[in-house]
Amino acid sequence: MSVTVVGSVAYDALETPWGKRDRILGGAASHFSIAASFFTDVRLVGVVGEDFREEELDILRARKINLDDLQQVEGAKSFFWAGRYDYDLDVAHTLDTQLNVFAEFDPQLSEAARESRALFLANIQPDLQRRVRQQCGGARFAGLDSMNYWIDTAKDSLLETIGLVDAVLLNDAELRMLTGKPSLAQAARAIRELGPSTVVAKLGKYGAGLFTEEGFFALPSYPLETAIDPTGAGDSFAGGFLGYLATHEPPYSDDVIRCGLVYGSVLASFNVEAFGSERLQALTEKEIDERFREFKQMTHFEPLPARSLAARS
Amino acid sequence: MSVTVVGSVAYDALETPWGKRDRILGGAASHFSIAASFFTDVRLVGVVGEDFREEELDILRARKINLDDLQQVEGAKSFFWAGRYDYDLDVAHTLDTQLNVFAEFDPQLSEAARESRALFLANIQPDLQRRVRQQCGGARFAGLDSMNYWIDTAKDSLLETIGLVDAVLLNDAELRMLTGKPSLAQAARAIRELGPSTVVAKLGKYGAGLFTEEGFFALPSYPLETAIDPTGAGDSFAGGFLGYLATHEPPYSDDVIRCGLVYGSVLASFNVEAFGSERLQALTEKEIDERFREFKQMTHFEPLPARSLAARS
Image (cartoon, chains in turn orange, brown):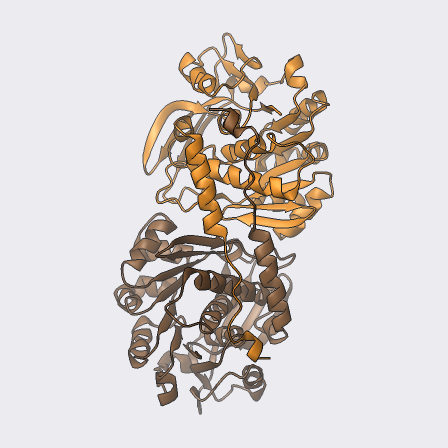
């Protein structure tokens, strides 16, 4: 199946202890698309301003991402975000947000986009997410991301939208905040009771957890020597996850969903190795395969009983 | 091999959103001993005051822990700690610390303790840890825990002591603080360059990471529905880890060390299910085995290639 993603395409200004970039390709839908493009065909639904350069479009085209539904609005400026990270890269300090053309974003899906069989609703206003979901009636697997801002200001709408998707991908604090539950296990159950079969808890540098009908699965993150810039890692995660899933036919077995979580983690780990999407632009399928194998190695153990366990009671 | 542990035995007053306890058995060496006792014989080196009750000693005796090296000092009071945790149990807020008899703790090891072949230096002043390590010349595997306070006030001594042990168990913030490195991978390498073959990064509710000659291994934590009290979880982790290792002969293969990490995680997860050591007091080997199998299930995945991956390049 091909995947359609609806979300932001932006310019980012980024600053971390390891360097800075003044104006590079950003936005959730950009990161998602590039990551997913390693697995399947991707269609990007979004909006940019007149200032959006061919240079950035070429980055997306190089990954064969379909841009027929990327609107460019004359006389408008693109969404711009400036952020700074401290030493441990845990918290993004927003320095500037200019929504510009994104403030009026009201996704209009082409016929082709409406026929998508896999859909990702990146972090935008939950009413818009729901409208898109309803337009894509034939989607056999739909995933959703959101953020604390919408939990604060549009919680009911978000919960209604969640009821219409198959997979929710949120970070652990968001999951607990949205549900008011103290543990991830309880929060995931509450979300699954709303409809989604699959809840993915993004744990940042601690990896990711998965809650499905069959139970719990979790992965550590890849032990990078030096993380450079986490911007977009969550979207690259989602792109690897849904992109991989789209190469299989739903409904998905737990085996497939678990592998999706690994591919998501693989793509997220590469994302963090450079600014913005720079590392993913240079990524190869061979590198993806190698890191997938490393994930297998770093999570595998063979049960070896304690030699004297049986002797004590 | 039997294990000797040197560290605190205390009374704790604990308060979490799920209840409170006014005066229960606490201390790193207590938690460690009880956890390790499910795997091997344990000898506890510590000190308590005249106020220490038979009731608490009986908890340790019930686990067949050897208390010959637990000194009881007349006219003195036992170490007392009072702490409170908020909703997410991440941070212990200290309400009261009375070192009492523990302030003068200068471990005197019996002949039997000196002959220990496995040793755990729980979190005490690093000079004392080093003196104990030197007294136990025949120990074939020694592990060490510490805390931010000693990193701040006795860093050089701690680094010297670390050079004398086989395994360092610290939380991730402590590892990065001690080495001044931004990533766990770099911090673990810096520690391993001082001598220890094994570095365990305790990640709290995010699990644990392991760095050895053979590479990296990581485990999520067990997805508890409701965590009640994290006090002593790190020490129960260490007890499960070293207790299990002691049932095998060093030098340890990575397979054995990885299983040790799983057993550590199993014991830590039970620890958190009730106040202090209450859950471990009621624990059975059957429950340990079951949860070990659950850890296998929740970390296992079978590589399934993306169906269309090869088609794209």
